[in-house]
Image: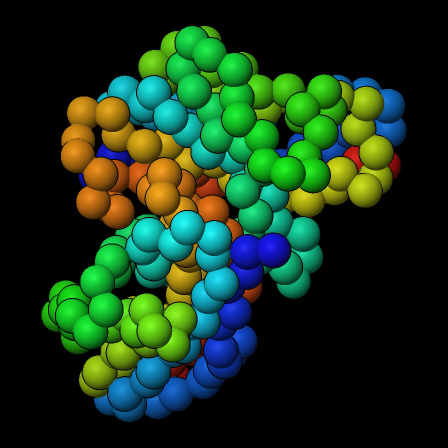
Length: 119
Length: 111
């Protein structure tokens, strides 16, 4: 089946630094990727929709200057958490939509997520 | 605010039991409901439900959507230990974007 690789799986960074998370579709092209965040004991919440070659669309309440999304190719989207604070510590997970297939629910594939801890 | 609520949050059953997982939703411009199984990290797709009252089936799993009452159920019959996982449901909006997930139901099937 289709695979989405997310890296790193775990990352610890200091307050004030930036950290980049990568999301790659390994065997399909994805013009659209999605970034989610999950705080402990909470639901996965959509942060932004990443569109290849154009600006990401952010959900209400998500700071676009803090969570920089770049989707420079059909197989790679990156999320950069800038000036990280402890409150940004969370589980971040991406998903990618297979552009070559008609949407029927099973054409979105998830990465395995990244645990970010800001100390 | 869009939200999806799943119940129960956790469930322990014996092999062979039948379980029903619940999902209620409030999603603006709702289009479809998705069910996923999450065993380790990456959720894997189970069903997409768009129409009310039409059951979708895959082996021992089945699901149905009620758009009037804004809920869906996922049934698993003759459970096996391999069914142990977190089951997530998510609502999509008119753009077919998986918008918001429930907290999941953690199912444990014991031999």
